[in-house]
Length: 157
Image (cartoon, rainbow, N blue to C red):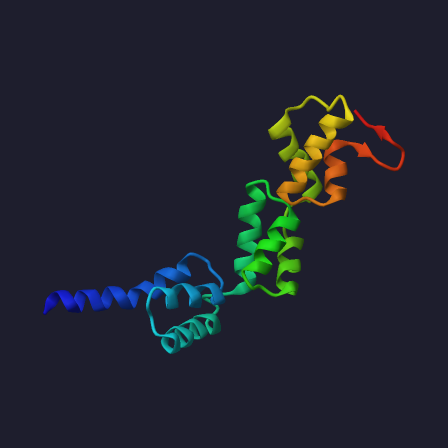
């Protein structure tokens, strides 16, 4: 008799562990339903947590931006991932606005990957640009990091 009671309490606490991970309400619902909880129960619990500001899409987006910017990802990649996770465009824009200086981050990521020495040729700059593009930086950020000026055809050292 004691073991089923302990299992029931553990099963009741599992939803609370889910929101501690700073997830969005939509993702929390999906995760709990996949784990086998009833949809109606999950929806009511998650709605209550969101109403009490324990689950918040805006806070989730800000935490996501801060974490992934710290890993060297750019705003385009972060925004695409947040859209894929179902967040609203205005929340994504607000979270990206609170992020770091994206041009400075692109320079930092480029230096960490390729070192302090400037690219000697357009081929090396193109390689760096492709890397930063993959990381999710815009063309303006890439130009700032690589020092390339496409309009004039010059390369700044």
